[in-house]
Length: 232
Image 1 (cartoon, rainbow, N blue to C red):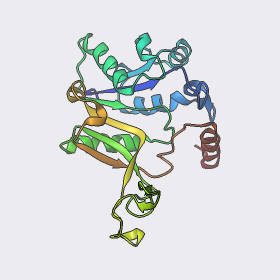
Image 2: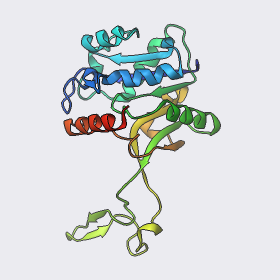
Image 3: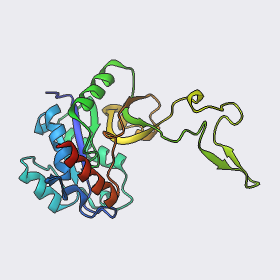
Image 4: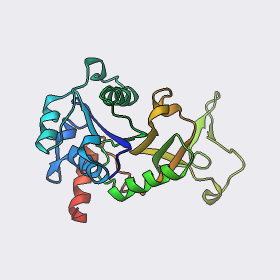
């Protein structure tokens, strides 16, 4: 079990795309339990922080045996509250209790197909490289060097990057996008630099199914179908 990492699971009460998504049952158990199960395979409950503003979420989490240490202040409970500020608030809460951590692992609830093995691999990668952040990604299906277009001032379409230089898909460099599943950050640097402005970022590549992110009810229905067919 790791004791040098604080695992933070953000779970705000308001959700428009999927109402009450954090505690909505997915394949028989509340969505947030998937993230908690993953976190518990990495470290002890003392190092797991569910950051929520919602007493209903707090109750569901504590019914699972995990103590929720606080309810977020009002300013971190709005639609415009950022993840970065939520992470800083949690770090500050633990530091005021004398708890210091080398790194922060952010696990969002909307990645139920993320596995313990993938998180462990990402943590091992972080330990090996000189980086401020290891972040999970998936390869982009649309490549801006080949198949993504922008409109110029005259209204004509041009390839977003590399116009005239790349004519075959296999010649285009691979490009990646965040999949939202795993973020591992240096705790000290996080306090002085926004997570999206960290320069030394290293990718951890995940497959399409593990990268599946729940944002809409259609996503939810698809996740149910995948779990039923996979007997997860």
